[in-house]
Image (cartoon, rainbow, N blue to C red; front, side, top):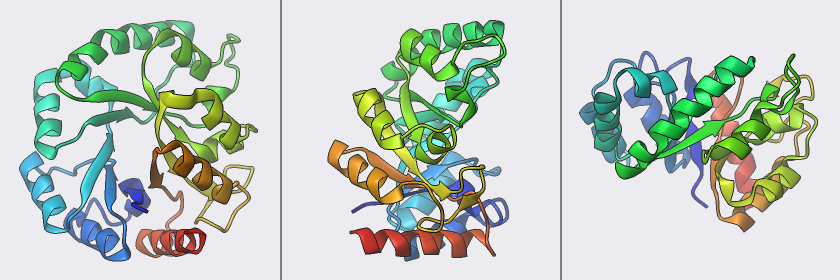
Length: 239
């Protein structure tokens, strides 16, 4: 089983030592990497790090505004990395005006990215599944009015009081990858196997559906490296 890691999980070390952080996750057995920032490194430098540790980029969490302000350079950077999935990690869509502007933009830029070999996706937190003050549900609007793929964060789905397994079934082929995470109902994140989220059932469903599994851990307890080591150790008990 090839597991991915969202590098935000090691945010206590990636900004200071991205190379060392990538080496650490490769040594643990993670094979796929999802970036959350590049910390001033050129695309060539990051690609060299991936190649050195035999890691594959599965996606990035990247700001949608970068596509709006500098499309050409942003695309060039991601193509050098070999990245084929540009995931928007979240957006402030709490008013109809903001939501409509966002939908109009992603519908405009998505075919341009597709022509460059890059898919555009969206990563949820809990609030996208909850009604806004204006009464709409953000995730439902994105489902109905865009062709974005979804990176379903199964823990935040659980915090929103939904069954992540049922959401995976409902969304079907709109989901290309998941965040496999654990924690408590109140939003307190924990390493895999330490919380209340249905991690084993979610993992089994993702395997059944043939979608990429990316581990993310909300805490750095006592460090990000130690936390994600516990996560992969737990996953090995499920294999």
